[in-house]
Amino acid sequence: MVVGALALFRRRRSRRRRVVGTPTPHWHDETVNRDRGIVIIPTYNEAQNIELILDRVRACVPQLAVLVVDDDSPDGTGELAAKVASHDSHVQVLHRSEKTGLGDAYLAGFALALQRDYDVIIEMDADGSHLPEQLPRLLDAIGDADLVIGSRWVPGGRVVNWPMRRELLSRGANTYANLMLGVGVHDATAGFRAFRSSTLETIDLTSVRSHGYCFQIDLTRRVADAGLRIAEVPITFVERVYGESKMTGSIVREALVRVTQWGVQHRLRQVRGATAHALERSWGR
Image (cartoon, rainbow, N blue to C red; front, side, top):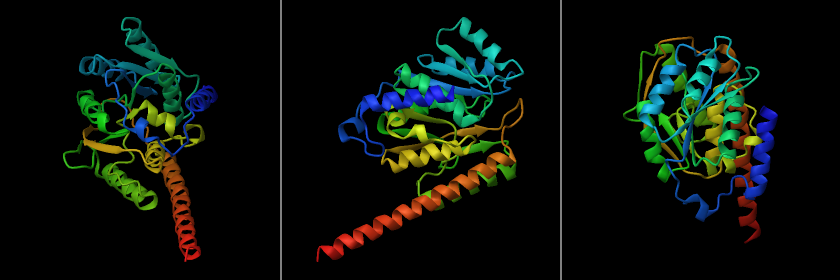
């Protein structure tokens, strides 16, 4: 499935003839159809949450499609989502054969959404942490941005029922990401976000290798490096009531290693750029 998704990205990118990281001004400001959007919800063992979250999403943004990407959940999440889809044409389910990480699930969802020419592609958790009632905030802001992040850490944003260690981990991860990558956002790890489809076609998704929650940092840095517009809107993040968190030590370690690697690469590019600029000035004298 991931191989097929990457192949589709390559075909679409070749057809659109866009250079990664070099957006064209007239395209950058084109109008986006907010009603032509899709909410992608990756799932693994979310049987206690999936039907309720689908009902809430459909009630709050009835004009949008919803795509559940299920990683072969043994608790029957995929079957429950398929039952909802059987009587609601706005709901679709992508059944994957194995659990290979959040990043792979989103890449598969992105590929399907781009294939079907949606204008706005939204990421959202299945566990109720992201409030469907706040989806209109993301849609309102996408008219003036290429990526809208639902942020816990901007004025007006907040978390509910989170243990202190989780809050410290999130704030620390965002501080480190900004120090290393210079992305300039408060909540680079947030998973409640809206992309223009043209944004996903501009950044190089074929080279994405991050699997866990650092996938969100990865996409944020790619959008920032491409010179695209990032907006943050305040949201309320609510700790899940049912099921278990997918956050593990291996996910944290992956994020730490990858952000450090990206940060070193970012600094080297800055040094090379400054050196080249200095040489140009000296030659021009």
